Image: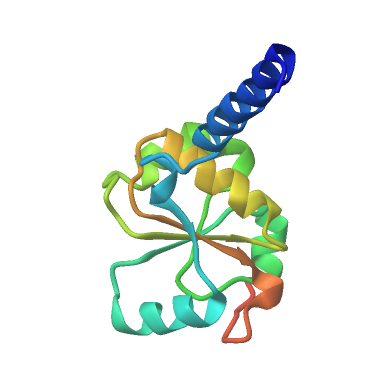
Length: 134
């Protein structure tokens, strides 16, 4: 093999190694996990201290939400959550309508130091009891 080919192979190996290290999960992001609605439902039946966090708008929440959930819209989550959820080790299940805002909210919570955050996805996948404020 020529020197240029050896350099190219070495470069590709080093790049691959660096890329794989950069994509590994850090300790902080392990605190932000996904949970399926069925598993969340089962845990909610057993553990009464789980915080169920709805991050949709007030209008969406009033139309339909999971009983016992706390509303903090994702748009104001950074400003309001530490006042409403003081214990950063609380188990928190986050949901929205389809799962996009809950993923964003879960990331924000972890960045703020919450250590037990679960993204439950969207209420549209919730096959259990809901209620309305209308």
